[in-house]
Amino acid sequence: MEMKLTETTIKSRGKAYLVGAGPGDPGLITVRGLEILKRAEVVIYDYLAGKKLLRHVPKDAELIYAGKRGGVKHTHTQDEINQMLVDRVKSGKRVVRLKGGDPFIFGRGGEELEELVKAGLSFEAVPGVTSASAAATFAGIPITHRRYTASVAFITGHEDPNKKKSNIAWDKISTGVGTLVFYMGIKNLESIVGNLMKHGRDPKTPVAVVRWASRPNQRSVVGTLDTIAEIVRKEDIKPPALTIVGDVVKCRNTINWYEQRPLFGRRIVVTRTRDQASELVALLEENGANCLEFATISLQPPDSWDELDNALVGLDRFQWLLFTSINAIHAFFGRLFEKGLDVRAVAHCKIASVGRVTNECLRSYGLVSDLMPEKFTGEGMAEAFEKVGVQGDSILIPRALKAREILPERLTAAGAQVHVVPVYQNKRPESFDGMHEKLLANLTDRQVDMVTFTSSSTVTNFIEMIGVKNRQELQSLMEGVRIAAIGPITAKTVEENGLTVHVQPGKYTIPDMVDAIVADALAK
Ligand code: SAH
Image (cartoon, rainbow, N blue to C red; front, top):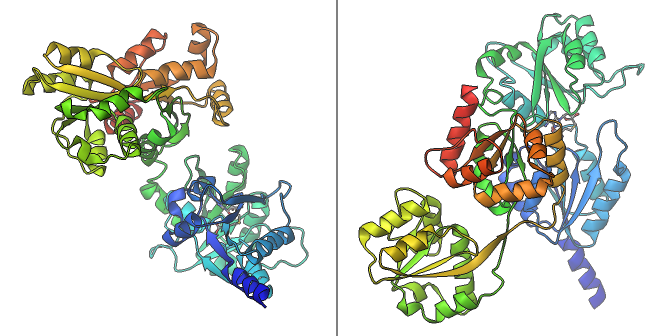
C-alpha cells in the first residue's frame, strides 16, 4: 500500500514542458519558457533550438541532443524521442522538450503531446517565436502590410516534388494568399516557384530567402519568382532558410534595419574572461557583430590568503580601502564573509573606486564609493587622491597578484602608507575548450575582422594561446585583422608584440570602446 502511494506521488510530480525556443537569438524565448528552462531536470533539445539557451539550464540537469537536421542522418528517430520523453516524465522528472521556433509550427509538437496524453502524463506547452516571424522581422519584411496583403500562409516546402498527389492546394494558394512563407524549402525551391508560377502567380512577384534568421550569421537574398532559384544556387544559400513570397518583400528597401547595423556580419573576437565578456559582447552584438568569445584569462584565488587575512584582522588601522576592479571587490568580500565578518568590518573606511562599473559593484554590497577619479587609470586615481590629500593615511589595496605599480608608488609619494594585498590572480586558462580550434580556423580562413583587447594580459595570453612560433607567424596570422585596445597600456603591449592598434577609445570604458569600434566600421 505504502509502496503504491509513493509510486503515484512520484509519477504525478513528473511533467513534460513543450517549449518553443524561438528562432535562434537566445533573447527571443518567452519569459515562461525561460522560467521553465531554469528549473529543468532533463532537457531534450533539437538542432534548431539555440544552444546558447542551454546556459540557463541547471548544471546537474541531463541534456539530451535529439538532433534532426534536414538531409543529415538523424541522431534519434521520432519514436525514440517520444520514448525518451515519456520515460523521463514517468520517472518523476521535469522534462523540457525544447524545440526551434514554435513547436506547433512544423515542429511535431502535436505528435509529441499526443504520446504524452496516451501515456497519461501531464504536460504544459509554451509557444515560441516561429522562424517565419523572425525571418520577416530581421530581414525588414513586415509579413503583412495593409498596402500589400491581407493574408499570409505558412507552407511546408519539404514535400517530395515527385509525389503523385500534393497535400498543398497550389491552385488555391498561388493566387489566393498574399504572403506565402515556405519552411524547409531550399532543396525544392525550383519546384516551389515553378508550381506558384504555373498556377498563376506573377513571375515578377518579389521573393526573399533568409538563412539563420535572427542569428549574427543571418544571410538573405532577394529576387523574383523567376530568378530566386538561380540566385540561391549562385549565392550558395543552404538550409535552414525560409522563403518569403509576396509584395511585402518590397518593404525591405526601406526597413531593412537588422542587416544594416554598423557591425553586421563582422566577426569580432572578444578575449576577456567569460564572466567579464558579457557587457562587451552584448554591446557589440547590438550593433550587429558576430562575436567569438575566446577567454584568455581565468580568475583564480591567490596562492595564499595570508596577506589578506592579516589585513582583515587589523582593518582598524586603514583609513582608505581602494578597489581598482570588480574582481577585487568580489574576491575581497568573498574572503571577508568566509571569515565570518560582514560589511560593517569596513564601516570606518573611506572607499575609493575606479569607475562606473566598480561603483555599481560596490553598491551591490550596500556600499557607496567616496572617491572616483575623472580618468579611469592608475594615474587618474593617483591624481584624485593627491587632490583630497592622503598624507599620513593608511590605504589598503586588495587587487590582482600582478598589477601596475604606478598607483601604490604615487600614493606613497603623496605621503600615504600603502598596503597592497593580492586577492586574485589572472591565469591563462589551462583547458582551451572548443573555442581554440574555432578561433584558429577562423584566423587561418581570414574570417576574423577584429580582435578586441581589454588589458595587457589579454594580449600576451592571446598570443601565447594561439601558439605562433615567432613574430612573423603572428603578423601573418593577424594580417588584415583590425585590433581594438581599450587604453594606452593595452595598446603598448599590442605594439610591443609587433602588431598595430587600429582602434582605441578616448575614455577607457567598454561602452567607449564599442563606440570607437562602430566609428571605425562606419569610416571604412
Ligand atoms: N518549429 C520551427 C520550424 C521547424 S521546421 C519554427 O516554428 O520555426 C525547420 C525549418 O524552419 C527550417 O528548414 C527552416 O526553413 C526554418 N527555420 C527554423 N529556424 C530558422 C532560422 N533561424 N532561420 C531561417 N529558417 C529557419
